[in-house]
Length: 265
Image 1: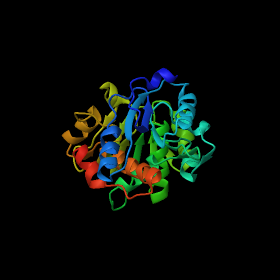
Image 2: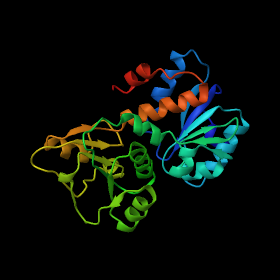
Image 3: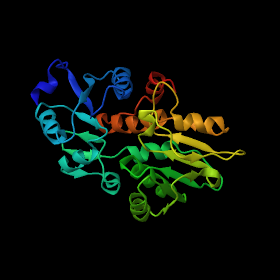
């Protein structure tokens, strides 16, 4: 596993672990934050296959690294590796931020998403998907006290998640979003260019939010925009969860404006 670090700068002390990892914008925002605060060290992407997260985290800890972000599909493995976890990480069931000094795990996805939520009158939310990202979104909506429904291609997973976080399951094979003013896509469909079985109302609308991001809008967001919904990709959530991670590692306020410019928010 030491070959994983071959070619990595000896000054690297922060990383993001995942597979795939080439699309991640975390290195851009975190490296900019380190420079803005005059801190030493580099932040690098590391492609880590499923099943190897614990071994890699142990290696980085032994070498004196400071912190890491964890992305799919490793967040559960990171939770198992940590010796101590925040309340949010335990409730969500995933770790996306690691502090190596005390082998502590955090989840900044849920709090980060919470910071991006707009003020809505009579909010009524729908979550598409029932995986790890959906858990973070459901946690955030529960914290805000908003009623929410969960739809998933596998209804049993949606039902289980809804019961755990106090939402309701949408049992239909296709989704009519006319009764909602916030629809959050947590599925990976957009990463593969796939459309979701969503029917948009011909009048009115709300906010469609996709937690993924890319060079172009996902099919989900393009479809929502075509029906005059406001749309937002995952960069705002990325910024907020990354800022919270930076603050946990350094003890300094995150330079959010600097980080936001790096990803054109």
